[in-house]
Length: 435
Ligand SMILES: NC(=O)c1ccc[n+]([C@@H]2O[C@H](COP(=O)([O-])OP(=O)(O)OC[C@H]3O[C@@H](n4cnc5c(N)ncnc54)[C@H](OP(=O)(O)O)[C@@H]3O)[C@@H](O)[C@H]2O)c1
Image 1 (cartoon, protein in one colour):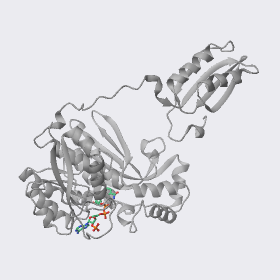
Image 2: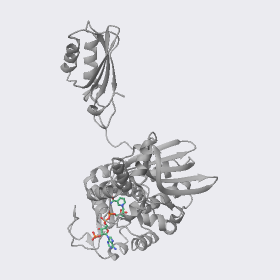
Image 3: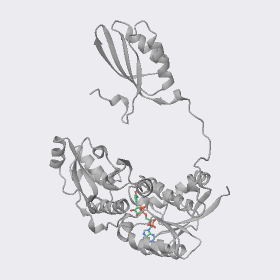
Image 4: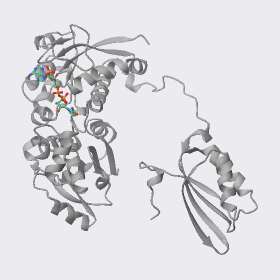
């Protein structure tokens, strides 16, 4: 397939814009192999072209004159990553009205002016894509628009603001609201002026977009009832804990009897609910619908490269649906070899039954060690002259564990079967409890 060069312009070259350029450069070969298109950033609008830039573009790419992008009809695809409703709104409107497709990461713009922008896109045949405007790297818009098209999604419950989730997680560990917010600011999870996050405005814009897409009916930002986390105190956090719950800032939209309720506010969430386990700056969105029952998507909801990955995905979707249609083609573009099944490493739980007498533990340890399997945790339970051993190992390839178990089964002291079950844990096997 001959490669097609696609010039791309950026409105904004800040945290997200520079990362979009970086991804298109660093992943350019991958994108081209998969799509037959080489997306190149040829123009980027900024306020100050002389500012020092991370991942600086080539000379001549940065401009402070909007006409260099808006007036250049050879730039058929533009990513709006500058933020704000003015002047981003009029710029995007002009681009769409003139038939140029736009990808935006701007939740306030989509939530406030979505109707107008989509009308302009529809009348010119351009595309407006906005995955990055909600939960950055989590592809929730694509899932709602494409994967769940035949599912009547009637409820959305999400943690869609990482700053407030970080603050509430820190409060759950004992910090006051002020301490937790200061920590979020120090670590770069909160802006110097955090009003839009802690006041719930950011989450409200995302919920307006999510519910509009999910219900297929415009949910204006004004419909979203908003309460922030400024009033949450240690007393609330402790009361929630005592009741086996956690305080979270939830964004919830419900379709009830054909009518919409949308609200953002603090809620007590049962520790067993999937959203209770979403900690720190992470985001998660739970979708409930007739055919799917429940799907939860979780991941990083902010960050330059994370947001840029969604912008790039939208750019790729545009080039893949305008003429070439490669998104319908066989997705296979290269041939990978299969990893031999025994080679993948994992931590393991082993259950071994042996005679309860001196020297047996050493023999077991020797068989495990001779296959390079090292023990992280071990608990011994005596049962009727036998001992049942519960062992958690460090990471070891399945094939080596199988060989060690075969050797253990062959020991004269072995009783009953020896089994191995992979352990899935994100906190390291040393920290696992036995309860
Ligand atoms: N950062 C994140 O984690 C994240 C996550 C999700 C969504 N988003 C969204 O992505 C968008 C961009 O965010 P960001 O963090 O990349 O912002 P940023 O770092 O502040 O970058 C904004 C860029 O736009 C340019 N710009 C702003 N106003 C302009 C104007 N009037 N004329 C010309 N250029 C202008 C700035 O130029 P200068 O560089 O010259 O100042 C800068 O390059 C926002 O809509 C934001 O809500 C960001």
